Length: 338
Image (cartoon, rainbow, N blue to C red; front, side, top):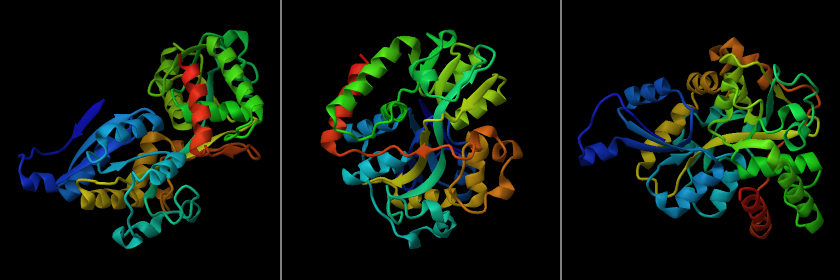
């Protein structure tokens, strides 16, 4: 899917090239009016191409799209992978006047210590939601996805995202994320293959829509998508399973060989403004990593059950495995998707 977002038309001249920004972004994740606000304030024309998983984004960049985009919006573990593979450019805090707006907890993060390549965009969780008109039983366990009750079998959508599916599977089994233990890897592979017949579909971009339409009665989902489904009238409940759930932070990164580096920095600085960060939160229903957003947040967002996990529930970031270990997980994923 590609969207060209601009307020005015420009001629294809050298001056036009100086006024461009090429963004590689998740689907349905930034309000058009915020992009238009940036264009109006800066005179920069923004083009956005979208992807539906961290892995798809990385594969596209490595297959030849690096150098075509200025910024991308990878998840936490993917920032670390991209940096290790030399895909990211770096910047200094002085290049972003709003750098000081980053919340302290999101400043010195393990996937980008000191924030040399990235800024926080939004953060949230990944677990699952259930249509309460279809299933009224206990939804406190990841067994809803991996060993579902009869009412939900054949009516479950699973994210088409290797990192999240395999991590939630590992959390369910109580095994490490980056294990090389053959017995543990076999248990993960066998559990996923046994669960697959109960799944109706793999889809990240459809995760909300299938719950709203009733095509799925349950689904692995991002918490903001679940909130949107509920706002659109679906009687869904988002679960924070007892075994744990995925916590993630999406980040805007400066890409290597960005054709419009200065414009990329202007965009990143724009997104660190509290009012602008809150506009993304109000649209996407996640949480910002920027100080001072509270006065700009809609009450239905700040108070939503999807953004307020119960006390004591554990969230886990997806870990970036070493290359040899990652190949083992890639094989499990490839086998699952056959």
